[in-house]
Length: 148
Image (cartoon, rainbow, N blue to C red; front, side, top):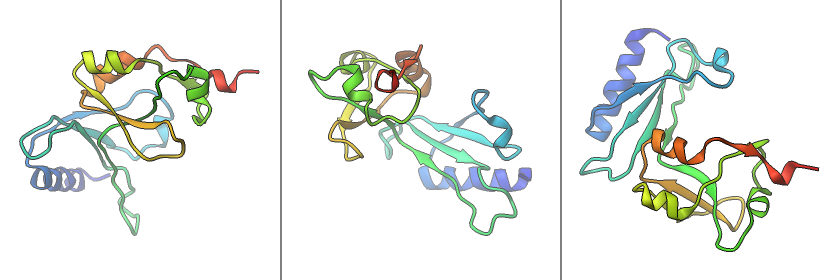
């Protein structure tokens, strides 16, 4: 995507959220499918927005009739007291899962909040920079619900 269009998107985010951001790129997964110049903007909490926010920049092709960008404010998780990792993984379609505890998330300064989703155990992990959330959820393990 043209750098002027990327700058336009970034300026929009700055006006919308009133905050500067850090820019990061992905080097895992099928990155060759991403639009050239694709970035993820990381916005730290501020007075008007109390949570970490992640926003795409340059996700759509410049020629797309309806350009699309995504905003993420947390990590979708499964959480329930007394449930096993296998039970919690039953609604997760991925072959690998990250595992941590609510106690570890809260000790790192984040929280796990019950939210609506596809299962009664759906929650959102929020309040952590992506690096800290990533540390808590890696290394991943094979999804035990997908094992024979």
